[in-house]
Amino acid sequence: MDETKIDLKKKVTSVIISSIFFSVVYNFMTWYTSSLTYVPSFVFSFEKYTPFLPWTVIPYLSSGIFFIAVFFCCKTEEQLSVLSKRILFIITVAGICYFLYPLKFSLIKSATSDTFFKWFFQFIEITDSPYNEAPSLHIAFAFIFWSVFRVYKTKWRTVLAIWFVLLGVSTLTTYQHHLFDVVTGAILAQVSFVIFPAQKNNFQFRNFHIANYYFLFGWIIILVALLLFEFCSSFWLLLFWPSLVLFIVGYHYQKNTTRFLKNVSGSIIWYKKTFYFPYLAVYWLFWKFLRKNKKPIEILPKIYISSRLDKEEILNFKVNQNTLVYDFSAELEEDNKIKNIAQYFSVPMLDVGAFDALEIKRIVLEISKNYKHLPHNGKILVHCTMGFTRSTFVGILLIKNILSLPTTQAIAKIKHTHKNAILHSYLHDFLKTFNI
Image (cartoon, rainbow, N blue to C red; front, side, top):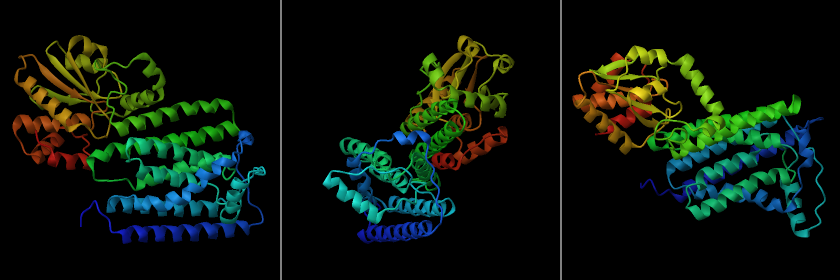
């Protein structure tokens, strides 16, 4: 069967199963929580300033429509399968949370004078409840909906993006959820993305998988910041800074923006150093204390791979004007000693991410050509930040191209030489199909 066409029965079946499962879990937990003698609330002190906006009930209620429509917008069986798994997972985890930590909404809802909006709120009172608060299923579902609708063309994509933002905000402005519920709902959605990635074996989706980890940790840090702000001091709101950095780095992973930090000369301008300081600091600590490939490894005569070298290691490597350095690190600047002495090339790749196959092919061919014309005291150094994956991957391609070896032999050769090499399964799969 054509993978682009799904049997309508499968979509209908998925809708029915998910809807019944949601209805059973949600209504059971409503009954259970309402039977308790005491149900606490969790509300931040500043939430008393949240405005009640009756008109936002419209985007709030639209969640039910999207819950049905999203299944029929799936274009492949794999997409439908991933969507169903994510939704069932979210409902299950949320149900467990409602059972273990029941909460209720605590703010007093203002009376709605407008007859039109009053009818919608009356409908909510019948179908919804003040319980089943954290994590917010409305928020988690909104993330899931966007994961399907985000592939639409620019015009509708923008409209839907704005609408889903309104849907998220409406959980607060219709007085149905507290902020704690919203953030935990976002975290739950991101966990579902990590556990059930879209097109798991598709190399081109690798960056989206990594981006989800950045987004997940970004939301977790926001939750921690809010809790520390509430119970400790406003100082902890500074944690919003690293969370914002994580969101932006995740965005750059989605776009495969390899030069979001370093320019063509391999430098990071001062304002980027300032803004991305939390990200750069973590990578520097990893580089300082966790890297193992500190001494360049000779994989071919006069071709070396390594991690980013420090000043002492550069001195020991005896860099000269005939040394060609190819820097595949996207995170840390090259040491000025190398830039001032060697022939330096900045060709950043995102860590454990995908890359532009055509660009990699061009670089490998360029290095191979320069290798043939090296002077007697010349050598080539290929390095990334940690020396585990990116430099290893390029090293395999160089061995394969220069020695005309099969991929399996090139991998075996570099693994024998580089004991700390890390080649993820997605790179193994890509190397099988990549030809220069």
